[in-house]
Image 1 (cartoon, rainbow, N blue to C red):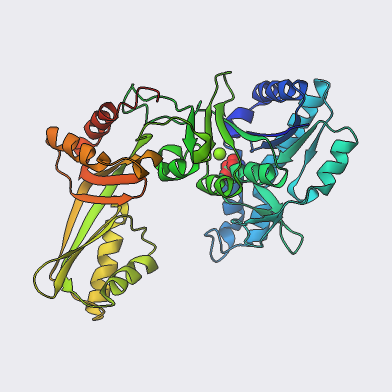
Image 2 (image 1 turned 90 degrees about the horizontal axis):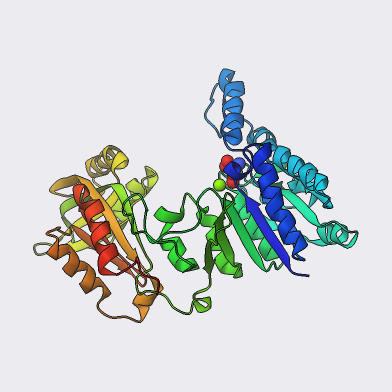
Length: 417
Ligand code: ASP
Ligand code: MG
């Protein structure tokens, strides 16, 4: 009998009516002859509420920031949201005549590391589940987002972690597929708010999904996509509010036909910083990026250019909200004599637009076509970076939408391959 993992996110189990609606989808799969493992999130808003309570409870303590109070108790509290939905769904399924029971993370067990609040799953032994399936259980309703640490205490996996729970179960149980039911009906070629021509993809490769994180991040926790890629778990993203087919996230080899460019991602709030005239010698890049890393600044694009003899210019991009912090970290390091530069150029009005597709590996001229398109639109490119399956450019923020729309047309993403 084929085993299916079905995961329902917070909006899909937000109240009893929605839990019933989700349960009907589970029932349908049971009737089709599937063994089903359901993974549920907490009702939407519930985890935020629990985190708030923890913060309030700790507010008398010396240090109240998360991480300063007992993280084991944080986990004990925030894991409870999923316990509620797993029990409720088991009851609703039983009312529908299905042999269902709830499972808390420790009961399976979902073994994790001891990093409370951000634990990683180490193993999911299947013996307990298999024994209950053998006794006639038709559906196991698993509380997502949680596990048990080496010390026997409840752990949680980090926000959005129930996607990772679902994929980990699919991998451990060799599931036929892992269906992620959510409030969007799939992955689109680009943000539909930017162009009405955005098209829902039938399939997308794991690597493309990871590169398109800015499109998919709200839909799937990135970690879950990495886990699915490593274990070749076929993931389907679909809406719990209709019966439309969703998007299958799968291995490149499982996709027969695709466009050269699969999707276009963009990110609005970028900044570009350039250190003018730094010494061209070993160790300079390390010296520049060390204080930035220590300040917790996530640097994205990096370009180094030879300027005059023995000097280079170093350009990088980071979130616009981090510019002041980056500047302070660089100035401080310069004052300590760690490296030198003549001046720091800041451009805080840029956005990043990226085209992504595994087809780029075997097609020439993709970048050229992108650049020509921007040229025809009169859009100046400020920084370019590439990977094997992606070309990213920084442009003036005011041109972001235009650039996305124009590239979507140029690469005919509105047409199915
Ligand atoms: N309930 C948890 C959260 O809100 C886990 C999840 O929904 O994936 O982060
Ligand atoms: Mg989620």
